[in-house]
Image (cartoon, rainbow, N blue to C red):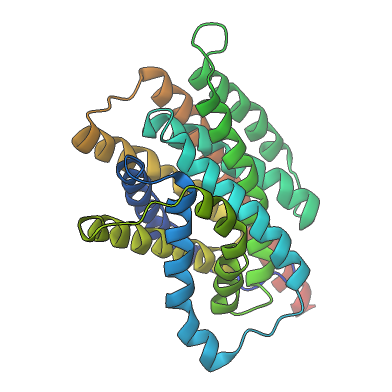
Length: 298
């Protein structure tokens, strides 16, 4: 995968652990804030805060890029994915939404194959098929009612996979601050119209929750961008599985939500197949590098 940036698995995984923790806190705060504000407005808070924070490094280093059309497309998918993710947790239990979005690495593997020409090995194809089985266990169509929340959560995962693959591509070509800057700024006008139609002016008592949410959401974005800049998407994406136990604990403590056994069973299948795929990918990478070193000695 030449030209897609350096490959530092440990650093990539550590950044993704930070992203998982930040995502979990942000989703819980979305549930809390949705009692007072629309999801459009909550999303706008995230974008406005992120833009303000990212401006200083951009003013120092500039935001020149040759990939502006791709950034525009990525902004559309990112806004749709974030909104869908946030909206889903207002319709279904937080743990269910998180578990369904565990399909993200599966979608990412498929899109990385199509867009970045990463090979779709047999073990990755098996992970896609097993992942589908895991989703069916969580959703239990025909036994449990498949409502809008479950479909919206799956749609969020699909769109996040497109975003992740494009982030991986862009992070190998532009500075992290540039990737973050365009990610926030180009989404602002997209979010502004629906936010204006549903605007509720926050009070001072709303400020701590909004600030905490904005910090968690920005932290997640920074961590995930640095993670993809450090390592392959197919390697670091599975680390986001940490969101399930973290989100489940938060949802239980603050909202009294108890996760279904089917949610955990389906998530376990998704976790197992993606972890296996990650280990196989790591082994293939080691063998490829060893072969390249051997060829260079000849």
